[in-house]
Amino acid sequence: MDTRNLADRYALPALDWSSVTDRLGAGFGQAPGAGGPDRHTTWLTTLDPDGGPHVTAVGALWVDGCLWFETGETTRKGRNLARDPRCTAAISTREFDLVVAGTAEVVTERDTVARLAAAWAEDGWPCEVDESGTALTAPFSAPSAGGPPWAVYRLTARSAHAVATVEPGGATRWTF
Image 1 (cartoon, one colour):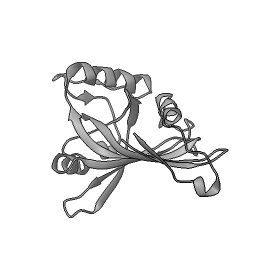
Image 2: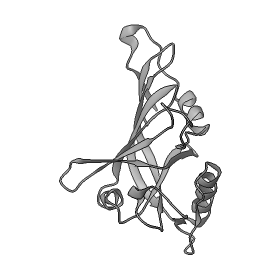
Image 3: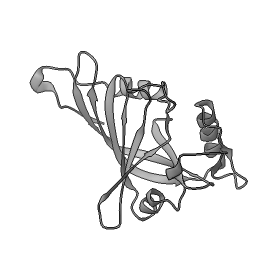
Image 4: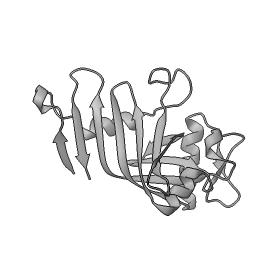
């Protein structure tokens, strides 16, 4: 991993990637009152066929050093990722604003899908593994996710950058 301090001109220290991942691992719920200005929202940007950005909110988790999200494969973001897996995800926490850039892939491995379903359920979204064992279902999801089943995606980071929002401040870019 290459670390670049983007705030050394202000004599601020580089942020530590492990403190970022530790914070993400503590969760960033989307329910009102869960964080951020009132909650956390993860914004996913995919590439439309014309190369333009398509930005939408997704339900996301940080598990095993990766950002995970779910959506229907027939949604615009799902179709965009099938055509071009490059994407970015952005989230604001109390401690930092973070953008992760990389590639997303659908994960259908049954044990992994079940583990992620349990993690989302523990975070407050009552999802479960569908009959196929390779996707999710639930009584509801975000309107932008389309109807069930919802595919589970793993975003493997190519780079990330964070801007600290608490003292002592700082901004850092990591390339993996």
